[in-house]
Length: 210
Image (cartoon, rainbow, N blue to C red):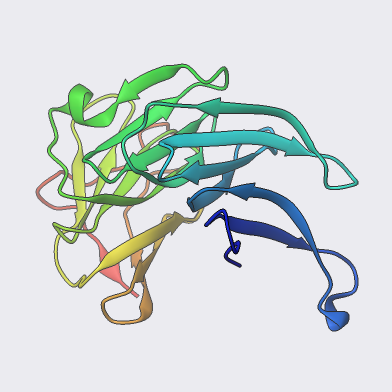
């Protein structure tokens, strides 16, 4: 819902009376784009115009607790929690960054891997700590491991990929707004006790559309 004067978007949480259409305004942000939850249960909201990621808890009365903001981001879009705390955020201007649970910058993906993004969009992190990124412009999906080289998981079959989520069974769910559908891919995994989940080489990721 657009504010009449402030040009802000209200993020709302539904309460118990859904049939009545009752809503509660959680807070107002200038230009919210992405929303996620970190490992501690705090909400993460990207503010595109202000270049920030807001982090805060919500109590039983839907009041904001312990708010904190990370600033100086360039067009933050999508955000997700990292398995060991902290979060991952994509910037429209060409980078993906990993922050710790104390909101300190840990890694710039483009710097660490020497990778050039076109327009990074959706991000997710699996339980082994691998970061998976959708490149909307290049229409590809890459996996960035904690150690080793990045792997291109999907290089064809996408028109305009945006959002992404990964399951514990090794499935990728990709929102393709170019074809108005959700595409499911399976990337090959080793047994859960092995932290190196990918058994395929970068030249043969062995992806199977479902």
